[in-house]
Image 1 (cartoon, helix red, strand yellow):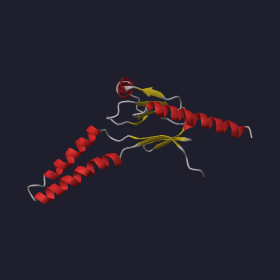
Image 2 (image 1 turned 90 degrees about the vertical axis):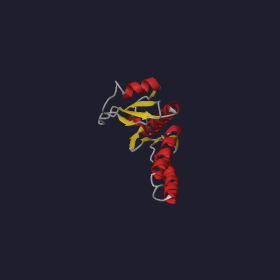
Image 3 (image 1 turned 30 degrees about the vertical axis):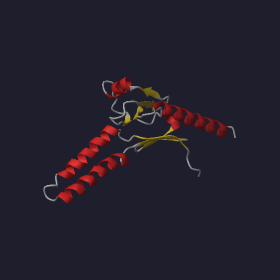
Image 4 (image 1 turned 60 degrees about the vertical axis):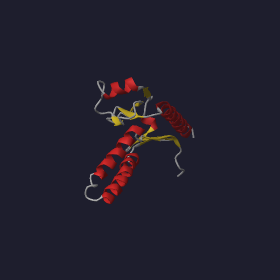
Length: 162
């Protein structure tokens, strides 16, 4: 089996402000031990100051479009059961996560990313009406998804003509 080509890949890592907060939190947590031992306090502050931001980055979900599947966090869904992606600007994104929220949508959302996409799921057997994804590059995701869908449709039509 050939390796799948990634058409789009984005890790939803935290922005600089969130990383700075994690560093400060780690350092302050380590500084609590300073009255017991200055060396232990400083070593713990440095260790935790590096550990918390690394944990944030390592645990950040990935959104990826491959030739036949979209991977969003833990979910995997084939491109041919997805509809037309709708790019969400900041106002649309706030609306879809606020007053227009649908409980059955599958969401991979990060508070520090204010744009994204909504992709309808057109599989009648799937109870999930749509994917709602935080993305820094929603236009690139939409283009990659359309390219994957077009390629998949072309492969399906050519396999039926044989």
